[in-house]
Image 1 (cartoon, one colour):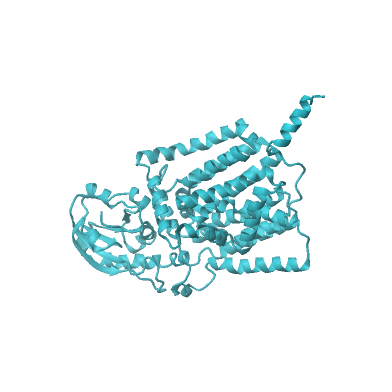
Image 2 (cartoon, rainbow, N blue to C red):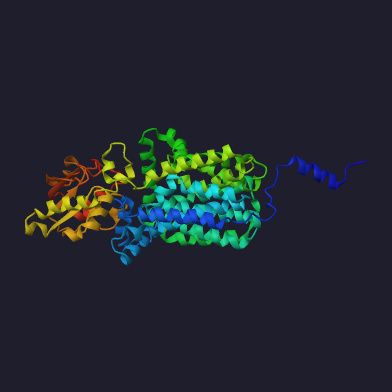
Length: 518
């Protein structure tokens, strides 16, 4: 008897790849109070250490750029500069208030990590494990200490993964406008976030759930997100697409660092932390191969694809950190199937305790004098000495004759130096600084009637391209004796411009960290 049509269809289904169908059933209860306690403890720790040492270089740049509102900047969408300037206007000079949003989104990220574990079927222990992994992750704490691009980018990616996991489980299309909102905000925080969305789209096409791509509301939300990026794209186009050149500079910088590409994956694991690295590996394997995690395989593939893309392009390892929480959640859910035993419980406690002890070292919980050690944390070292830089420059500027000072200005080799002088210089009688470095070059340009330049950084050979007289007049130091990038930077007095500034200023523009003869 020939097979019926139903039997033929059944045979075809058995031979086809499994579809990413929606998971069934309601998730376990949310462990709100213990997870909230972890989140509050994280926020408290970050706020208590917020005003230790000083500003980070990018924070100084954002504060200065925010005083020049624009639809875009050479290396940055507008959200962070405008937010930083707004906070500083409301709470002048307060590091605590400036960094409060970073502490808040980091604490919320702890809650989202637990919520991801819940959506994936994690019971109370799995939710706590995922949340605790976020708390003891070095990259989470370090970026939570600063209001910079990566801080908000990681949070928005984490929220996006939660929305996608929840949509996959519930098929509630009202979640899709929130995905679009996250995309819109991401594009206003970091231009490179488009990489995440591109790899995510490819992953959805390859492994599903393809139903998501057939939802009209998804495409409407995506169109809305892209529409918000149009002003920034217009700014980039009018200014020669400096972000593309900046991406190449970052690639070159990463390639020149010790280890290069070989350090990418080890750095990813160390950024996750001891406990986080274990959960990350378990979670990635589970998302990619476990039958129970089949509907969420696209997220594992997205992480793997992003790692591959940034490995090839020499991206920075923390660019993939926004996907850590969903991997931690998947790993915690996978491990909850293991039978609970006393030795295993003690081992878990020890691993998390060791992770916490290591992770807290990325925060400024120690004396500033520890930064005099050659192996001290580089990020912390670069947060020290900004007021001393301003005082060093002011000493040289004040030494000029009064008539010469009236037609003098200050230029710096690096954007962070200019940001520091913009922050601390006015109180010392310094004029607003200029810099040819990265986005700072676009903020303002010197007037043609300038007669004298106090230049911070670079070298005499570089400066003699622009001036007939170059004389070293000072050196940058700091009271803490921390030998960071500014330590020993020369301060020059330059006169005799070889061309009017309206013609010469374009030659000062550079994206690399140090000026070079060109």
